[in-house]
Length: 470
Image (cartoon, rainbow, N blue to C red; front, side, top):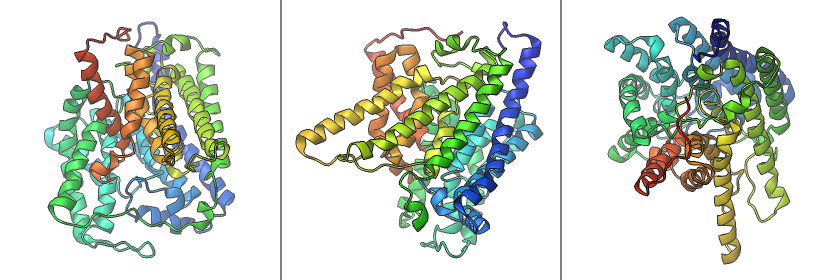
């Protein structure tokens, strides 16, 4: 902890790191009955069962597959389980634990559920037992391992059967056994991959597990389908006319949801930060490279950053969603789908560990720059514009591309824009490499971007404008 923080402030910061994820889980739980009444989701339990027992490739919208209330409940129970594991394992309070939790609840809206998260998670626990590692020091890796949960659902409910019937639960017991073995094996592979892939991008991608798990996903996907000659699956067909008729998804409900969440977050942080924004300007000057904000500033200020950064994300989403209605030449994009709601939490993953509005802004400008370039080319060539900033792949891509913010922080605005531009180019195609079975596709995409951009900057001797945060 920072030497400028008193022992009392340090203890309070630790308590907040533990308490804030619990608050979010309970917030999901409290919102569930309200969502059920709001959408008249009287088939709540049927929808929840469908979420738990369906293949969940990217991007499986749990709002469409199940419903608003059942999806929030899925996030609540997965989040509460993660909270329980933190307390039981006595994991050290730090920003990484908070990041792992955020990624779990983020993907509970489009691919992760209380059933498919278990085998990878237990794989890490087995690894700890066999290798005599402390669970408390590896619980964040267990959280990250759930990024491969779609493989579990695929093996259990569709793989080798070749079909999936959403109206009945058909468990492939051979596949279930394979899912368990695969999940346990994953527990021994991911801890070995993380240090090496982090060294590859040298910490310039905050979503560092994304590159490791993305590479592993490529091998798993290739073996399961190309090597064994099994037909590649398609996304689960979802027929939900009522939901499909909503032009912006659950925009009104989710805006209120997030406004309340971020308002409470800000208010608590503001009060505990001596009713001020004290040191927030200092936080905004941080490069984001290798900086644990909870250690440097305390969790009170991090709550303020989470709230303000979250509101900025919310404003961006609402802005890009209305662009197609203002400019008819643009294709229609996504609204507040399950995936869109999930990426709000995903984008906040490292708001206590390097991300803030100032260093992620250039990344967003990079996405807008690619959009402008493609739009200009389409206008000149009379091609139809193939995507817009509210296209689901680009919404998700930007959320994780914010993990490249250390490049903007250290190298300056224009290289941050370049990082965002490069990431936007590939964000819609990287899922094909692992078959859509890796939930951290955006982190994988950001890792590949850093893997290309940083050596180029080194080769041309581009020097960082700012030193590392101290």
